[in-house]
Length: 352
Image (cartoon, rainbow, N blue to C red; front, side, top):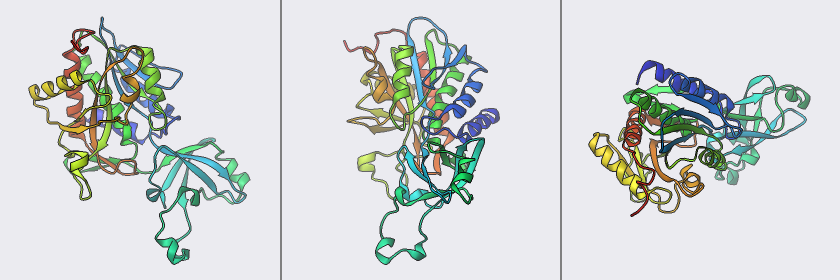
């Protein structure tokens, strides 16, 4: 990956943007988009659009930019902060983590505390930790001192830096799904270098982790005929995976194409053909009921949108140390660009 593009990815991943408070991360995304897109804008819902103007067919490339986080629910007299999850946390991974709260005058660092193991009764040691029994300690001595820094409703993220690992792999918080927002913008960058005739919008959507609200309003606003949604999916190349139920998905095995639910069968088949033609490696997964992505909202907007889901394999999803292989990201962007260039008719994905 080009050094400048990798530097952009690192900025994007390191900027806090929990669901509903994505503005800072979205600004990083839009600033990069302005270097090559025809027009860049944000809407009142916080969605960010980067558009290549064309004629006729309208294509939406969507990746949600929000991440899971925490929200302060109560501040006690001693200045300890109690909190609720923003999105789906496994409470066990929160114990002892540092957090970055978006406070009154900037970021505030705290640590998530709970009763020490030494003080737990024998029967308590076998019980799973619960968020309602945890708190955030920001080092203050009173509620008034805490209120100078934070407030009820203040949000934050786990304070986990990005690290580069061997074989082009990285670990970071926020890969779900900042990497999807990054991928659709990189696909648009490729398309800007060899422009298609169609209109294409890469959109960094908001609030996927809580409601799919951003995807719904973005699709309604842009009125696409075709959409590609990029998200992460579970890699199954680890010791506890069940490949019979979750498919055979490896880091470095290429983007994952989803069959079923919100996916257009014709768009899915087109992606298979293009991956073979362009010699892009890929894996397959099924989603017989729902995809759990923005596609579940987008494909139902207005009169319906021919939608496809392309996923990036991810180990340790919804943790402070999610892991992806950057080769999968590069190949996903190439496949999306090839897909957009293959489009010609507004009705080509309507069944005969």
